[in-house]
Length: 333
Image: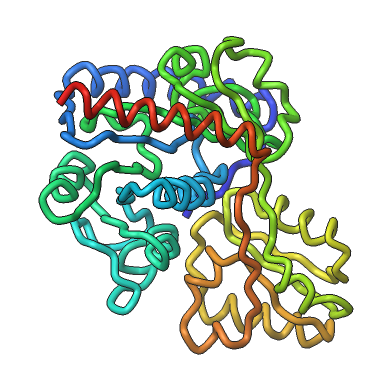
């Protein structure tokens, strides 16, 4: 599973040594796009993705968008690759039948509240949604660089703390595509947290840019008040989770970070539990991590669920853009 290397934070020797590999990556990506024949779905396809490798906060955004679209009497269906799962699909996710090893942690987490279709081939997944569901809009979770399914709207999510790091293409840096090459194709940019690296200054002034923030469930935080906490997380940016807990005033005695989508082994869990006992602390993790735990471990670990929150006017602007794209698609059917 993926873990961001430290050298991505600067343009040092290792990054420059890997720059020829980045040039090859860029060439192969361009070649793939040149020969791809994208499928144009009859449904509007709204892609929530990023231009960097690793997690940025896409899944919480997908969740809040689907909730808002349902409130507007639309029927969104989420299309996911099911990263980390063994099923290639297309398959409708069912939490009663599937676990994270089948469909991936993010798809499983979203399927608690929404219809989620996992398909390794996104074009086939879109066709499956057209035939097998009542969807009137597809929310594509990740896959912004996928050339085989045409996207009617592209929403890029950035981790406000990390930004584009050293700004170099993979593997010398975290970029899946250059920022300059992506800008013209974006319809909106969402920052997960404050834009600490000033990416917004590099974007066109007419491009919709809004800041979201991940807010924990207040009842869960209140329950942990006065307790000693040991936190662990295997997400795109575990430090963000730990800093959030510290900012809430909990007594965080230890923290353990893992790679994004890390599959927790019995050895991992036994060590975490032993450390927590030594500190007299309660084990706490994210919902994305908790859902990857074996069922018998879930009762021993507390989960902190988060939602992405926006200023009302900013979020209304984003929803208005989405509704415009949906209406345009319907008009041109």
